[in-house]
Image 1 (cartoon, rainbow, N blue to C red):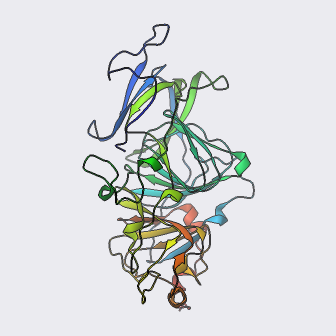
Image 2: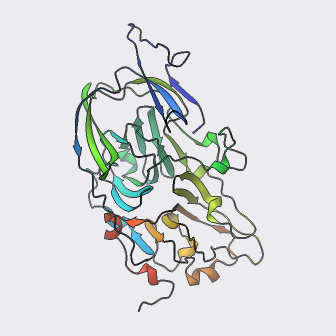
Image 3: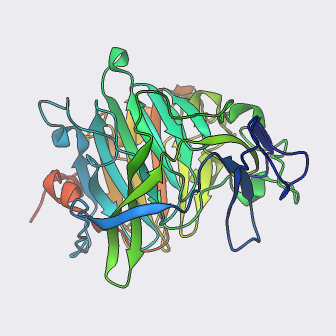
Length: 401
């Protein structure tokens, strides 16, 4: 994110002394990507950000993946994952793994409780808020969220989720990257500014506006932070205990920080005939892209077919998360709000047969869906296996041998 922000108290020049009113020196921390060769921010702490007093194993929820073999398109009913009582479920430890590969994991949670302090040391997180509102408290400050937001949290950012009980539980679709998440390169100038043809701009990105300092209700010392990271054994967790509270940053500046982007601010691109998914792209990461299909005017050629043509994406798997409205191409398939479909590479997919004729003459679509396309095959997590309807693959033919 090449959009510079400055929050709180920082020295006039970087790497120079910053002291409080009593003369105590602040601890400067550079948080940067790609080994000092990409975006970074400088944070100024009251305490020492490296000071830990304990490090123990944190047992993660089930991270096992099962190959999609035999090759099968799938319909996963995420609402079936929601327990009857979500009072004690939080947005971090309550996540359940739906799909994943070496580049990205897709998880789902319906959370009502505050999460523990948490840091993902594997990569950036891009969490779509299906419903609910609240705040994400981070070392950079507070980031409010609401339904329709993508909440982008940079790798290794200490943070916690705090749902607002008055808006109901937060339904969160977590895109957990093994890399960084950013706007597509084709939307950016060579210096990083979002260009005129991009479907959103810097005004639509909302980051922290003031520092967050741990208050009287917080422990001053021996504070636990859950850390997700990787070893040769795969993805693991560690419970690190810090000597002082990590929410001690009095100021920071730079181009690396958490932010939200709401799909209401995305300007859909349309055409005379059906436009391919890249026109709906919002973000990209190493090995995957994120797109948003939103309410929009559709094709205006007199013979246009508004729903997608059948297509074989030979290099990618396609995952659609159906958020709101009535997704035109899936009419007649049993897909509903909260459903996820997996269309794997090697299988031609497209609209249900009855949806094609039904779409003719349509002037607008009222639908909201989030798509993740990956360039390595996706495998099923424990949650995906649990809510596979077992019938979707045969919906185009209407029968099964």
